[in-house]
Image (cartoon, rainbow, N blue to C red):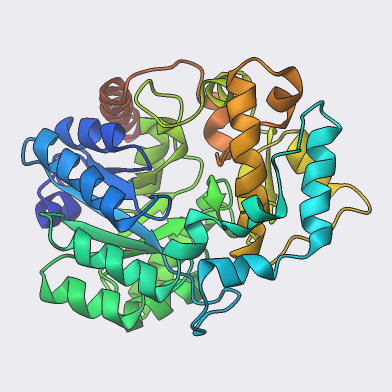
Length: 382
């Protein structure tokens, strides 16, 4: 495909696949797109090194990237506090509420102790500068071709070190003004993520956001490439984004139901049966607005009288601790846990009907894109 991002990054098709699963990253990159491995969920620097080493050994030299989440704002930013220190600030009321929700679904919470909550969450460690820098050290020691950051302008050390290594930096935005701010900071690729997106997202729809971001950047004299994101699960949607001025598509949800994905079997089953209205944009999972699959867990946090979600990363300490137990029980057949099970996913879930392999998804994107481009061309008088 003719695309400046293909030329910049050495890929065949400007389809970017964000995933926490190394297998998805490898399969997408080998199929001609670019897999982007999510670093925020890794257990430790050692585990991150092992994941990237595995990707290097299996990707056949194809380009891949790494995605970080280093927010501009979060509870305790700039303070020298440990993960355990942060966990101690979680109110008892929130821990008790989580236990109450699980108990009401027939789950024994005897092991959901305060000490277990005090272990914190992986996200709490990896979004902090110290944790992110240690992961960046590892990422740049591998032959990655892209660094991406979500939830704000990449920190100066990320921009400077990536550029020194010759690695382009992408950043996710939810508004035109944020896109301008990212370009002024030195970001190389803008990912315009609409509210339909799974995970953290803003409140502007993709159909409006993408052309607005492109127009705003061009009016400011910037030719920075823009990727469209948010609800994109088909090649025809990707073609529509390109027609609006995007240089390709950034995707995440569509990979969650592939056999390679890290998603739990119960959640995959729920996603394949879901419609576009079965997601919710809520702070109940991470402390920032985040789109996820509706479940009894999300309903509980939206109900009258529920505690107000804590700021990031404290809410993750509550939700990650409880949901790790829920998912284990759900996969074991516990019906109450199944009703609570949830995961990050966008509104495109309503079009995710078959558990295709990652390579099959890429192929379908390519074929669907081509068919859409032909339809568009055919709409013009000869």
